[in-house]
Amino acid sequence: MMAAARMLRRGQSRATGVGSWGNGEEPAPPGNQEVAAESRKSHRPVKRQRKAQRLHVAYEDSHGEKSEGAEPLAVTVWEPQDWCQQLANIRTMRNRKDAPVDQLGAEHCCDPSAPPKQVQRYQVLLALMLSSQTKDQVTAGAMQRLRAQGLTVNRILQTDDNTLGKLIYPVGFWRSKVKFIKQTSAILQQRYDGDIPASLAELVALPGVGPKMAHLAMAVAWGTVSGIAVDTHVHRIANRLRWTRRMTKSPEETRAALEEWLPRELWHEINGLLVGFGQQICLPIHPRCQACLNQALCPAAQSL
Ligand code: SF4
Image (cartoon, rainbow, N blue to C red; front, top):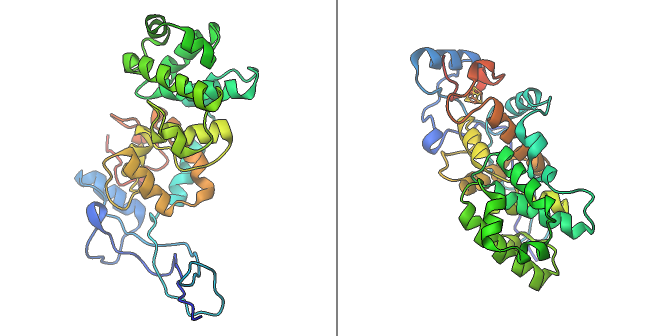
């Protein structure tokens, strides 16, 4: 049977800007630092060039099976121009690992000695449910109070809503979270023998569990990378650095845009790296651009 072959190519040709980040015509570009400096002077957004840099080759026949000797077709895959250097700079800025997320993130809120292992996994999920719209310090305080009275599925189900609310207050949306925690705990007891499910689809089906929590739960509780966990920090920074081909409006849109080009082996580190960066330097309001190693490479850099 004749095989239809396809090759995906990353590299060689320069992709033109498209959508909100697009630049339209591409005259000979100045250097990155000159562009950033010029933009800061004029208070206009930096216009940057886009290019595809990596090469990935795949062949498949009409049945999706690999084929040898077929003539490949070239497809250019977009990726941000300076992302490697920007990522290296963020790693450098984060090498002290002293942001709140480094000490108080969900993986640090569970009891590592709590037997059996499923109790730890339940505690991870609960910490993630508490953490949405909530500072890490507040989540950690709530987890400490819950753990002090014994944090298991059975214990939570035996706790009345009023008491549970007092234990988790002042986490964001604490009234809704009381309801979700109770509903999710009942499902875990009935269907999973007190453990948490080991698939993304089953996790997001639980009340109060969103995609970011589910991806983090898969990574922290099960050691499986199922996708990039995108919260408001990752969403904001990815857009500031133009790591999305077009401006994205939601964390889920950003996740899909990042997963299109970011090498899979880097997915696991993006959340912790960018959340801490967003807590310390690339703040939501008044980012500390003067202290940022990416200032010359960042289209959103502020002039102070
Ligand atoms: S701190 Fe400023 S320069 Fe650094 S990534 Fe954020 S917006 Fe860009």
